[in-house]
Image (cartoon, rainbow, N blue to C red; front, side, top):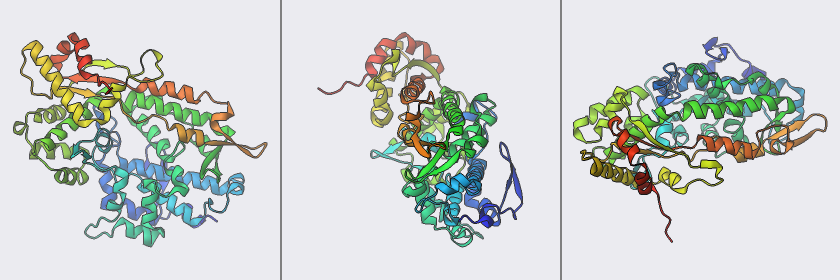
Length: 462
């Protein structure tokens, strides 16, 4: 049975948060909110460089984490008070007191491993000896839960003493290694997506993230066989609004060309610093894991001034917001093709190859124009391997039909336009291959588009 005393506690007062309003606080929750390891999230912006495009997008992972906790709490309260949801629980997948404590703590701490520009550096990460320099933020959860600060016990100790949950279980659930509730923390219907889509749209002041959250949560019921939440039929429309909101936010905010240009320039700068021996992987990790979005860039400037290395100018341009411009854009799935142009995606993961091609493009343009180029003035922005939608997870989602008492696959129900072929078309629209360069080189690059594309093509070995 779910503990009312834990799910509905508010002895710690309330906190006012954009989007969700007044959020009740418990004493155990307040202990984590006041912890230095959690407060550091106030320095980690939710959208990294997007605030260069949308000035209001300065919200942080601190308020997002509280929002995710709040939504998880609303979901569990709904499961607790809804007789249908209660009747569908089974041994091994029931929302008793211990399960609720675990889910709430994981929801609150799901982003505790984030560091400055983490998503930027996890995608096409700088490498050392062919290994990514930066860890996936989920894998850093244990580090920050065990981190000690003067006058504060580790968050892991607070979880054990005040929340009565095992920190290892929290870490495993966030990292995806503990399967029983994994889909509730990271899946098609997780509170993480519900919060960040609404919150990001609000702070960017754009109308794309509107979702009927209340009705969606009202439709949640357990699906013990699939070890996840299902929805009732009244949840189909709000689920569609969530899926469409994610597509629109990906297209217009998360993968905005200006944000991506900042990211490409930062990654190339860091890669050059590593390759030149100006810094080590250990030094970079120490710098990023203990800093904030704004401070880390100025710390880099202080430690590695522009004059030290040719590509140091990239960092200066980032700090001055004088970034490179789009010269060429190609579509991997041009003219409705069912298969992408392979070489456009080949540059996504091939770090060394990508940098070599950038040098080659600079040499080519230098030979055609007589300009003195150093190899970092033309950069590649290949499409992300990351999908907008998790097809497998969406296919796994089921709809509970009250009339028959049966669970039916969302994909097979036939009541939504969000079918695999429709979603795949959305997916392809977001994938673009860009060549960016210094502003004074744009016309030269465009003039030699055909030769440049021949240089970039990666031919398969026979």
